[in-house]
Image 1 (tube, rainbow, N blue to C red):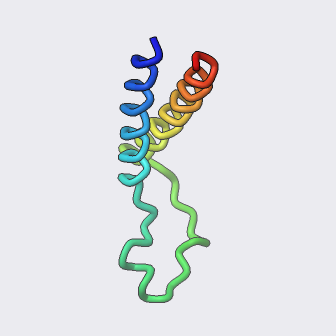
Image 2 (cartoon, rainbow, N blue to C red):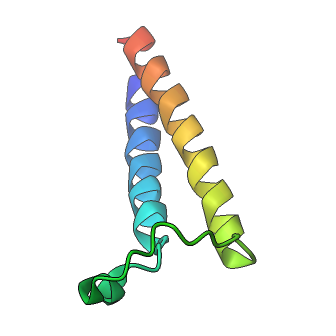
Length: 73
């Protein structure tokens, strides 16, 4: 049972890392110009909104799996 939880935890953590990396905040190389883009509000639409919710779901699943792994061990 513990090995299944560990495998699920590894897969979830990799997916969470990928989803966080895929979210670009628009700073990229544009941050080198010195323009402060943190004050500009942009609404999430389309794939950005979907990726945002996938990241939230993956983080909740990761948290639940971590608590489960601690309780099983």
